Length: 144
Image (cartoon, rainbow, N blue to C red; front, side, top):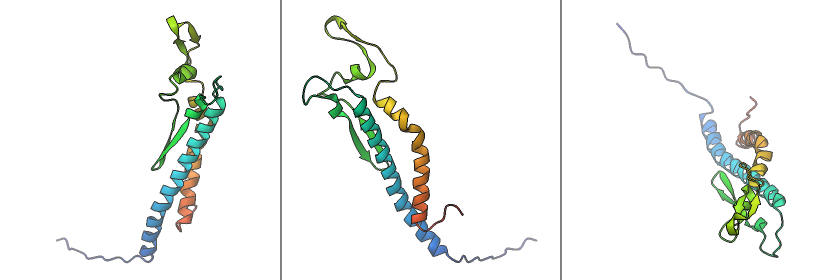
């Protein structure tokens, strides 16, 4: 016949663990927000530097490159209604009357995606470091 056993456990430091988890939640959000924003700003800066300067003062497509930040995310945008020629600059193709202006088609793009691919290898390691920093700032030692 099986017996029911009542086992009670008591953990020392549980309030500290709960406080650290709460602090980590807030710090991790802030750290990841910052890392995502910095990565997007880096992509935007590299994209602006790569885009050629146009002939019209104040109408440069470089000014269309912008960063939009969200919660733990950031997006780089380029172009818009004022710059309908940007896709042609970025990817190429035929435009103009009877498609007489030709620019070699480059599927991966010339500016934005190249800028992203140049910083992409460093994004994940920087996110890991940010999380470790957030853990330390929250009272945890991620190294043990």
